[in-house]
Length: 333
Image (cartoon, rainbow, N blue to C red):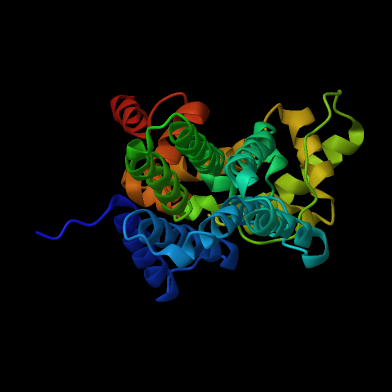
C-alpha cells in the first residue's frame, strides 16, 4: 500500500487548488502566488525530510522565507492598497537575508526562519486589530469574515514558527527522531491552513485604491451631516448597496471624498462603521422583498448578501428578529 508523507499530501492538495484557480476561479494574483508558494514549500519539505533529496536541503529555508512575505503582501494588496514595487520590494530582504545566512552563517538559519514567520504573523494580526473600516478594499457584505480568515492565516504562520523552533529544540536535545512528526503535524498544518484559508472569496477585496482608516472619536459636525446626506442620497438613488462587491474605496470615489473622511463621518453620525450602515439599507430592502412573497434565500441574494450567516446576523441586528421569526411575526399580525 502506497503511503504518502503528510507534507506531500499537503502539497498535492494545494497544487490542485492552484490548478482550479488557474482554470478559471477569480482570485487576485497575490493570492495565487501565495497558494503556489505554500504548495511548493510542502513539496520541498516532503522531498527533503522524507526522500532525502540532499540538493534541496539548503533551498528549503530560502523558499520557506517567501511564504510569510507573500502572505503579508497578499493581505495588504487584498484589503489595504495595491502593491507598489518600489515600496514593497523591501520585503524581499527577508528571503535575501535567509539566503545569505544559508551560504555564510548556516548555524543561524534555525533562528532566522521562525523569526520571519513570527514577525509577519504578528504584523498581520496587528493590522487586523484596527478592524472596522480600516480595511477599505474588503467587501462590505463580508462583515468581519475577512478579519477572521486572515487572523487564521496569521496564526498558521505563527504555528509554522513554533514548529521550526520545536525542530531546532529536539535536534539540540538529541531527539531527532521526533522531527518527522513535528514536520507532519505543525509545518504541514500551517501551510495547509494558510493555503486553504486564502481560497475563501472573503480573503480578498476588490483591488481598488485605498485611503485607510480609523475615525477620530469626536462629535459629529455639520460637515459630517452633509456627507451622510450625500451618501444616503447616492445609496437610495442608485441602490449601490445591492452590489455584494461594494467597498468603502468605491463609495469614497463616487462621492469624491477620501475614505478616511467618509468613514469618520459615518462613525460620528451613526455610531456604526460603513459596513453596518450599508447593511441597514440591505436589510430594509430584504424586508420589502419578503413582504412581496420572496423566500428568505431569494430576499438575501436580491439585497446584496452572498452568505446566509452574514444575512442572518445583520437581519437580527437591524430588525431585532431572525428572518424566519420576522416572517412568522408578520403572518400573525
